[in-house]
Length: 553
Image (tube, rainbow, N blue to C red; front, side, top):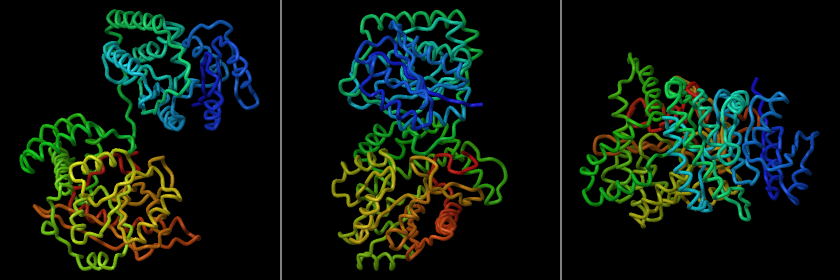
């Protein structure tokens, strides 16, 4: 039975520990605080948190013995109380508490694994500490003969208690700042897999550091020497027990857009110097690299093609060549997107079956909410804005990646007429902003084929390509609030041209109070039907490279 709690080691950290504990209790986690010999006033403040009725337990070590001793003391108390896993949280408040549900969710799904935060630092991290951490990462990769452990020094983890205490009882583990790295490596040697998840880390103002620059650096140096020697002596065992990376269902918002800034700048410079055709051929080795190393995206592509094959009555499995051509299609889409942004795609390049409807909307300044998707290349439709100078298009993006992408493109074309706004959640202020834009006659575009960033909320499972897929209800609910026409817009490549598929979903989406869930599902189904039909006509142009279907997750 999976039963987690939290262990908070502390020495002289008392300014924000109450907030840390409150965040843990908000997740319904019992909290074991271990005060590692703090002097006053920290001692009294920490002891004041002891509240067994609220499942907060404070234990004091009268002599400072180091972080490792404090953590292991908390582990033993937790195991004696019947808990199976412990979230280790530093008491100085530097870790993002909003990441805790993700850590716990991964631990519940993979109770055999050590779940660790992979820090994302802001500008407050001292450069010397950043360099030192990188050196430790390199040594850990040598000691484990693996790249699975991306960061071994983050104090934000979920430990399996039985395995962790076995390491502490049977092997040598550092007791101070060498503890986090050493226990992680030794758990890995015993076959405990490591799962990393991004965690924002900030160094708070007036933060008290317990790092002894001389003493702890000597301890860490000794630790790495000890680990390398141990690894060589027990090499057959290390190789035999080396754990495989657990398979994790990927959320689209957490998939790293690898090498994005460098790649886009390289693409931009090459395009400017050599033009479209030369740039396309220069891209090939880059695409090949990402295809070879992008396991998550490659598997998502495979699952998509399996569904296409079933829907079209084809037998067999998608070949590696099929997956590679899918990746090349994605590369072509990115290049076309940049070409459009540079102003090199005009109206003469577009095939617009419903051109009269679009012209009427432009002339009458009728705003609309447009459902876009990761099917085709809707950004090519920027060429439409050249028809009338007063057409304004706003794209609401879910991630910083999309915002940075468009910031880079804007740098190469400052006269762009598209506004890109990042939004992590659809709140009242967002709805008001959208309402004002639509009333001004703007076209507001939102991707309707991705789940909410925060997780599984407001979803409807809709049959798409023969299998249920979770679609966000947010765009439909938003459309009902805005009381404006709703369209689907797709732009599909056909040879050297682009076909704009502009289709009305509803004059106005109305959601009754009774059977509201069913009404939402009906509107999403109308949108999903358009997507499915277009996917079957243009299968190479689906670019949702993550586990989109519920059965895959």
